[in-house]
Image (cartoon, rainbow, N blue to C red; front, side, top):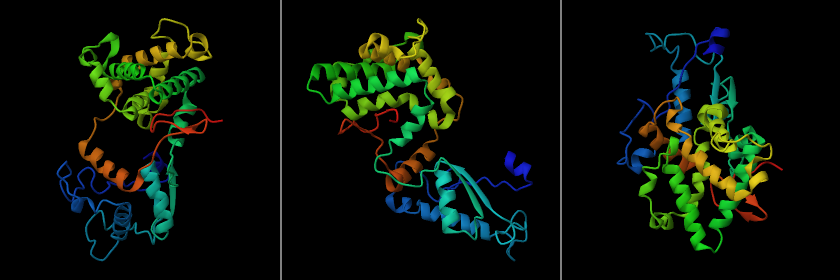
Length: 301
């Protein structure tokens, strides 16, 4: 909006089909494949072309379509980040006569089977001690989950599950209901994914609101010690780092992060798009072996 004001432009905020109020069908668990078929990138891009060409037409006798902003007389510039950025880049290539220019920020236009780079960006924003501990803990958990010690595997799974269900101030009310049977039934992938919980808000709220609180609790051992430049693993070893990692998972209250609550329609529509067109495995390779999907967080180099 600031850019539109600065350059005396007209800002149009676009609502994607199947999101918000732009629902051709009700979006819920009963939405059928026949109804979902119209939620594609190609259809969404064509929506933009149709909308842009509607301005200034002889039939547009009322505002705002009567405004003289048809792409043939007024440059249209697309601004977007992440998926909207992808659409902007596609639009510029697909319909250059409609979109004069595109500012595609953080737009993954090149599909990859292994999208470990998604987490690499987050890792680069971490403090070095937090990164060192996170990498060490991830390696440790990977080693346990791929190892042969079933007793240790179940124990680590139970500890991860307890950390996820615990709350600030040592609140373990929900976690106390867990049993070893629950841990044994948890898949390796789902257990490893708990390591990525602090990253769930990174894309939307950035380092300061999402990762920094976690790193602060981790590196200060829940504010009881002075952080070390080398991380906890460099001072006390990986098992101590894992213990403090669990504490940080439990103590950080992500419900308190300012933001909009989850939109079930938006979540379901994006899940359809993600699974049908944009799905990727977020993993990494280490020492010639592929890690458990969706949990590897390693520094570059």
